[in-house]
Length: 129
Image (cartoon, rainbow, N blue to C red; front, side, top):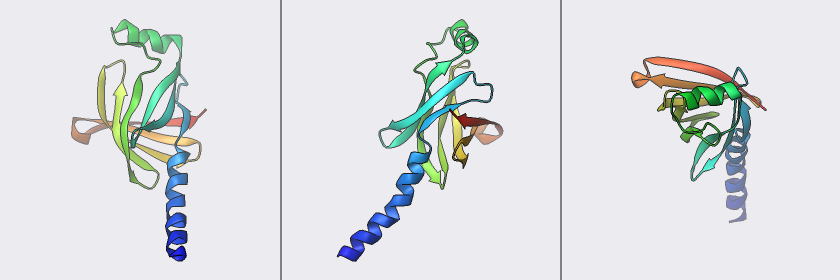
């Protein structure tokens, strides 16, 4: 019985550490937006916590809600080691697209969003704040 508990606890530890590794504040390549990742129920989400004045005005100018507080990363589930799948919301388009987030290393994410069933995709490298 004790051996089973030890095995169960050691098997669960890497998954917990791995899940925790993505939590934090990340910024896009231009450093115009910072996103804080966290849990949203059983899934992973990310909310805008900082944005440049230009980024905020671009979104506001198109009639969309304020950028700060907007969930950009929505409903991500683990889809492999260091990889999550969900939807990314593009505020200046007012739409969400299928997406994957992959940890490149402890301070780097590859955020990929795709249109039209995955035929047209774009990736960005986000860095930990």
